[in-house]
Length: 293
Image (tube, helix red, strand yellow):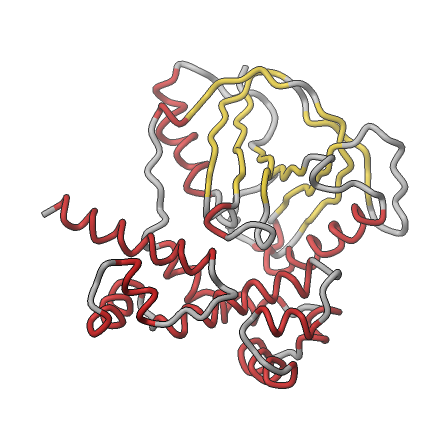
């Protein structure tokens, strides 16, 4: 029974991965049911029963999420190009659908995203993805490395995590103006609070980019800092890198107590190695670092 269920989940996961890789294509029931090796007459019901939303709505939300990221975080593409990538033949149709879903026009969202309703609208997609993407980690997934110290430029986010998207948007704009491209300047997040503190106002994370060059703030609150070198337990996460809490919990709750190691006096942090939407969401990669004595 367990093996059969695992096989079922594997086939459904293949469908999600296929959707991620082919958001620009015509994702009809024939194509998706063949990926899962299920009858197209039953596949749509199986999908809805597994993920809690229809195939059509899942694909719509996945395309809208990618479009949102391109609007907010990437300014190289026009709204028209983004609309076409989202499967719309005309920008006005995309604009109507986007406004209906998120309460803002694409142009308004690009200028000043309202992240709270956006998060609420995208939540069914993230909930669906999490049903099969909860990876089970083992001690074999954790490596202990000696890492070198890294000088970084830091933009601090302090306050409600709902507003983190706006800070990320400013951070991306600043690093672009500073010529610190992700391919040549590593990206780090340093968590200085719980992911869900008792008061949202206490949420705290540093957005960092590796650089040893003099820092020009260009009107932003940017400061120089360092991610210290030393021994670290490293856990690689592939896929759902928006939520690294399960990986962090594994390190603290399961790995650390039996490892014989002790945590060092520096917060847990991650390095982001590849980013959605540059890669399909299930191919995004981050490495989580737990500093050790």
